[in-house]
Length: 406
Image (cartoon, rainbow, N blue to C red; front, side):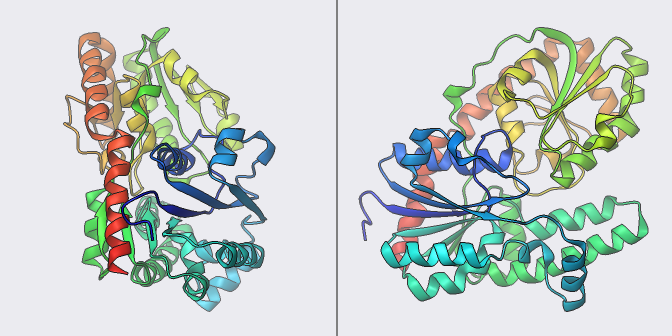
């Protein structure tokens, strides 16, 4: 074991972390890159799912070769029949969709042919492979809890207005909670992106050592610039992630008319991968829907105030950290800012009702000095608290502790 030198890390992922456009991909790849830059060896086995399929030939050679990327094609599309069968069996369909013989076979070959100091699971859905890992490796298994998954679905259920759908979401949350509470105790170490998630795990019976490791970015890649359209608002986020879709729909239906009445010349720009037709074909005044865009940085630079209207979720909203680093004034909700230990009203604006969300937007638009100061404060906060170099040093320190513990 290379306890005091470079380490050999195996990353197991339920998606290929490229292109680096959404929080999930960025949250994985930024750590992979920093591991390499710090002199550690990284091997990645990623599921190439039907939902987030990537032509591996488009992955940059320096990244693909640096992390020795291998992929396994997996059809994880939602199958109503399989979902119903899982419901009858009391199984978590969220997790079983990622159970693949092909992935298990590839993992088995890798573990037989290589030794690792740490095996890092990128999220709950990889924990189904823990029994196989235990048979073939003595390396500590570390679960990176990007989110407490059951908490997301529990919050989605609370906000759902359809009675049948709300009942189903509650069942999914209950099943996920049962499986997640078992999974966290099957690992050798856990990292969470927020203190709140760490406290949730501890309060629900987790006995595994936990470290709070914030999300990090390479702040130097983000350069604050003046937007080209100061009379604008924008949202960007993956719209195949249900909390994002729910939040955007809430904003459009409950908030936008209020904003439009108060600021009739202001325009809203909405971008996101896998945008449903219900949004693509929607006709809201002064709103433009883009679907997936090629360059998220360029999109964010064009417009003024960033909106993150989340009503459900867990973990950290990567786009908020990116927005801060890029010098954007941000209006979000309590759940949106959860896990980001910044100062409300000075670094970001936080509002949880349509009335307050509208008021916050109007204040930013009518007071450019306020928005400018928020953008400066947010940038300073990102530099001080989410620099990936410092964060990875802390993560490696935790890994060395777990190796010594094994």
